[in-house]
Length: 191
Image 1 (cartoon, one colour):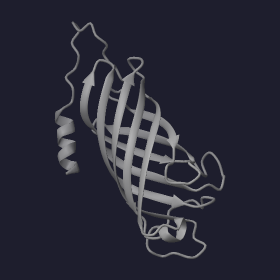
Image 2: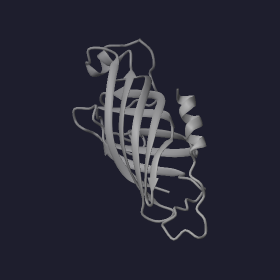
Image 3: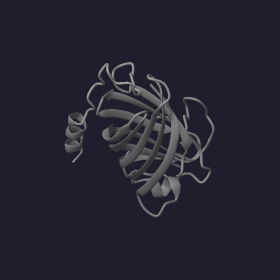
């Protein structure tokens, strides 16, 4: 299914603007968006931890996205959070002047954490009573809106929903099972 979406995204690339056009024309640095930085809140934790997302568009129709609180990178605070690491297809839905709407199905993995981050990822069923983090596969779907504020810079908003299967989630989070849903709304800038 994702392969089919990738083919459609590649085939539906917008035609280049002609010199006779008098309307706004986005002129991204590499001929396509390259990177974006977004912020929002982690909806999985009870504390609603801040979340930062970085997305790199490796191709016009393929992106790498990572979201989390920045633990061990920007702070060492002992917070509860869920972080996400995924590959996303980028499927254009519409473009009109300065605005664009995209659909991004994604696959990757997520990590749930309670307290300080120990670094690295713990996959699998093994769970110790004091275990404070665990990871597992995740599927997500995002709806992204871009508004070009300059011919090389855009504002972006993304609504994302996902489902991760983290075998040790009941020990780490106190959940009833390994299925861990997530949802987020992030906003930011890109070029």
